Amino acid sequence: MEILELVDRLEAMATHAKKVPITGRAMIDAEKLLELVDQMRLSIPRNIGEAQEVLDRREQILNQTMIDAKRVKAAAENEAGKRVDDNELVKNAKKRADEIVQEAHVKSERLLQAVEMEARNRKANADTYAHEVLTKLEEEVANILSTVRTGIRVLSPSSDGSERFVKSS
Image (cartoon, rainbow, N blue to C red; front, side, top):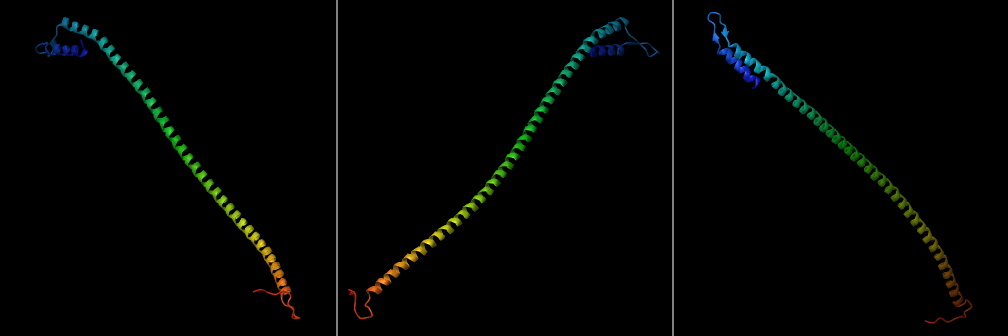
C-alpha cells in the first residue's frame, strides 16, 4: 500500500473512533492501530526507495541536461567563432582585394604615363627624322634646281647673239 493510503486509513480510524464521554478523547482499537503502524513501517522504506529512485532519475536527467547544455553552448560558441572567423576572413579578403585593385590602378596609371611618354618621344623622333629627310630633300632639290638653271643658262642664247641650241616647241 502507498503511504498516503495508510495515512488516510489512520485518519479514518481516528475520525471513526469511539468517543469517551466528557473527556473528548477517542478510543482506538490498539491491535488495528499497531497493524496499521506495521504496514506504515513496511510501506515507508518502499516509498523512500521509490522517492530515492525518482531523485536519482531526476539527478541523472539534470546531469544529462547539463551535459547537453554544455555541448550545445560549446557548439554555439564554436559556430559563433567560425562566423566571426569567416567574417574576419571576408573582411581581410575584401581589404586585400581593395589593395590589389588599388595597386593595379597605380600600375596602370604608371604604364599609361610611360606609354604616353614613349609615344611623345617617338613622335618627336619621327618629327626630327622627317625634318632631317625634308631638309636633305630640300638641299637635293636645290642642287637639282641649280643644275637645271645652269643647264638652262648654258642652253640659252648667248649675249653675242648666237644660239647654241635651238629650242623646239
